[in-house]
Image (cartoon, rainbow, N blue to C red):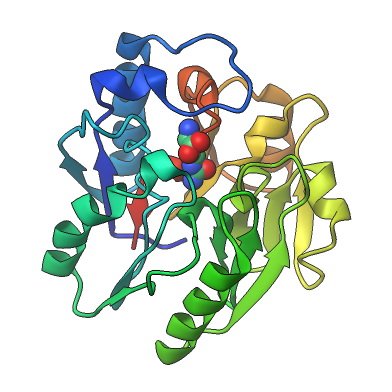
Length: 255
Ligand code: CIR
């Protein structure tokens, strides 16, 4: 969770047509842009240098730049997003990553992995199987990770959850923030779990960055729980990105 750099992508005008499992109305493009700016400001205030890529009109969900790639300080891995409308995002981010990372890997053209299904902890990299990430893709990613000296563990994202990290996030080396459904799935036996408050399930997609935890600003009860546990919390508005089934991790690649 110590990050010096991040890549984000500005929302395109087409972002209002982004994928969503349940249509709670299209987000407002102005409000989406304002949330994105607040997110960039929060990352910057946390000590991260943020590189802002231009919007991609042909890809409504491309502001969720976490999904087409996985990055570490020493290498970047191009992924294959599992939604057909998002698969082409990889080719658009590849040149950016090749220019910045000393080593670059690509998933073979079989199977699918969304970055939202990957939780990196100090001990291992969890890869969640989901409607977007299949066994073939997860297995291929695990073997690339092994080549880079990292252990992977393939786990089942509980049903009805878009991505593994929709329902959990890393708080520190021993602790995750999670929904009750994710905690009960028992994926992180060797980690402490802090539960999000009942009714604040979307708070689980938080983002620990250096000394602070970025948390959706509407989630007051979960904020109190984190503060009681000693975390320094910064609220960031996510109402509009929430309408697109997204949260705080989805909007950046961090290393
Ligand atoms: C999608 O369904 O792909 C987007 N509307 C939301 C992606 C969220 N990304 C993430 O959790 N990493």
